[in-house]
Length: 193
Image 1 (tube, rainbow, N blue to C red):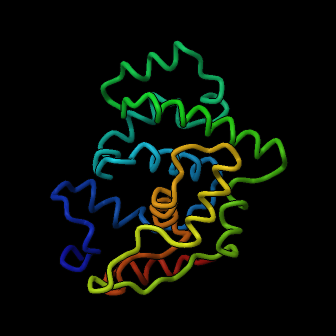
Image 2 (cartoon, helix red, strand yellow; image 1 turned 180 degrees about the vertical axis):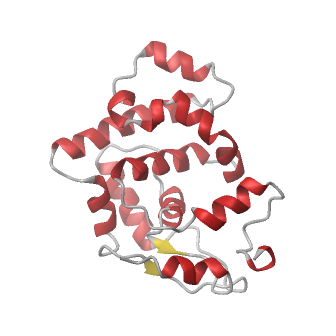
């Protein structure tokens, strides 16, 4: 399988290939898991994704399992604890965004909006099945990711620009962007509800 993986799997680190082979593009429907993945994509802004993969477990621990109910109540002590932790991405803006985003997630829930239903409604409940190849390449954003980004920002979310949102959509299977020659393209396509 390694010779046919998507071209972006270019790290010798086995964690990168494992992520591609088991997670990337698999449709995710759990609201809390979706929120965590959106936060991780926000933390990735300006960094290589492998950095996030290497720090993901430490970040989960530091951010209380990415539980929005806990994070929404973080105080200055929590902020300082996070910014002093070398095992995570220590960006004040990104830490603040995670807290703000937890509050926005809770606001949506309190308004009766399920985060999963909200996200998946943007693709009519079913993953978009793209047919990209190494020759055509992948887009960094689309009209859909731009529209979703604007709506998330309107709801109070931060670090959710169109490029971040598109990377998130790929990661959680809202779009299947495995190259057509990658064995995962068909495998992920078969997971459609």
